[in-house]
Image (cartoon, rainbow, N blue to C red; front, side):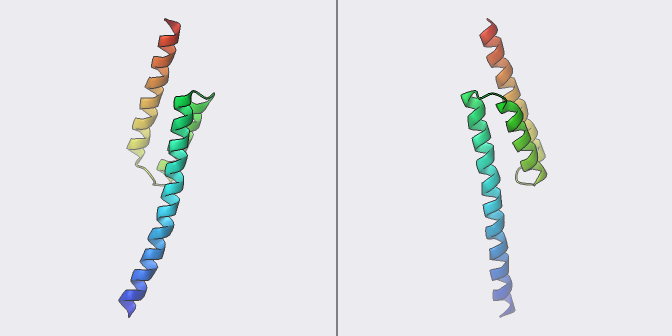
Length: 84
């Protein structure tokens, strides 16, 4: 019986973690969408959300750094296109 109880407890924990991770992943997607749509101060917001998700171990810190770099390059390219 002990194995069944510990399995139930592990399942409850994994469900909580799943909901927590989904919360952060939705925040990341929303921040990315606002950046793509060109809202003001969206890059700073996106970088903040990515850093917080990495600190909370939802995504790997290198993935957060890679995404921040990708979107910063995209913003720089947009600014260059506007200047030309």
